[in-house]
Image (cartoon, rainbow, N blue to C red):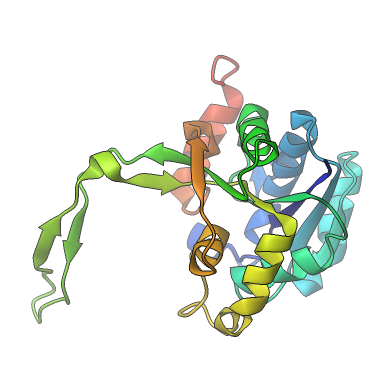
Length: 237
């Protein structure tokens, strides 16, 4: 059974205080996208890799990956993550399964990638790595004039999970879901929070497997500092 991966790297680094793409930010001396692709290669379960990048930065992404000795097809992404993933799926060719990953989760362990693929090969059409939620989560209402937010209810965190990537799918199923909800990809306000959301909305079951704290998402400057510490500590796996 063949497996292709699509790595979304077209997002900007605004929240990191940068003008360029987040996926080219250096972590332990190498761009995030290099770490993300290398983890896929090290998993030993990926047949080929497609990376999405801002159109103007496609050559820079290709150069970074080539310099690192990594083979991947780099294609232009879209204006939202959903649109970028759709562009990656269009370039993915034929395969049984696809793993859709975020370049910002650069330290994702190869074991986590293998767990997702194992569940796909066991017969599940949609598989997401996840972690239990450790914070108390409250649902709130609209902000008041003084900036406060009223608490509407406290959710039972025992039944809550935080989603990670790579999210794995039967390739036909996720392509069909993206095509069905393509109109939502035009703006961030209407686009899907993740690819599993689209598959759920299309009526397919989604299952979870164990995630990893190493698969943290680098979004803010603090995240990058934490990731640097994790990447430099040989005792952390």
